[in-house]
Image (cartoon, rainbow, N blue to C red; front, side, top):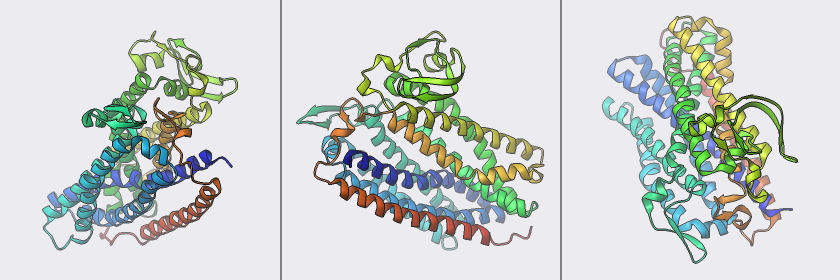
Length: 439
């Protein structure tokens, strides 16, 4: 058994499962801020009920996120000790900042929000969920800082066989931090929107006149259509240009540029093959990629043939994950755009086909986020720290493959139980529904 492959599988499994929960909670937290604010300022009990109901779902999701997040920290020292030694001086700073300045704030104010509804003033209650949302967003920022440094290292020197921090701000705001942060943050806002909209759609399919469901749907759709558009432009475009400039191998792999091209096309659909590298069945728009990446329709885009073969990322997985992420992003714009149009026409409640589509789309933004993460992380290979440390040199040398395999099996059983329990509890709460609003 290959211990490096098993360590990669274990890391993917733990981070992918954990990533489900913050993807939902960050966006849902900001929707709760809006709901609680409108309930307070408009003295609207229905928005109060939206806050109370979705706040309970938020608390449940947050708890699973905390439980699954602890595992990720520990495995750096177990399966990836050489990586920890190499980046410890740099990686520890953003993780410490995340814990001190974000996680504790988020957790403290979440307790006040969930249990202080009738015990503190309305202003303090609204402030508490705002601080939860802010804390979750700051937490995401510091995690993105740590991961972005692995993508585009900055603010370091190599000494004694490891990277040592010399410029905290350069490391924090490395070339990929802000594009990746806003792209990721917008993805979580989309996920929160579909989570609320999908649950509201469930109620509307049963009772189209339900005021709770109508107002929750309105809030989620207005929020969702806005962030779905922002995800494409400017944030998706900004991130794409950053990758083209700083990680050309990844850019060539995800875009399917296997040989250097001027007036390079955007490939809308193709079937990629690794050996030899080629795309079959291409549907493309000539020149568009060069213009999007460099603002010039005739700009050359480096192909993977310009890089050493052992520094080229896996072609099939990067291409497929990226293009499916983009396809889902277009679907989100379509669904939320249609919902916004029919909301404006005041006929959304009659469109059962669209309500069903939104209901069944609840998991799709989470899947899109997972696909984006796969494209980003697999696209960086063979490097765990871009052009500084190869993944094969980062794994723990004293951990047996059999041990890693056993942990994978145990984690799979545990995560399956946690996942099914989470879905069961959310479904149970949704079926129970909010307290009647008299609609």
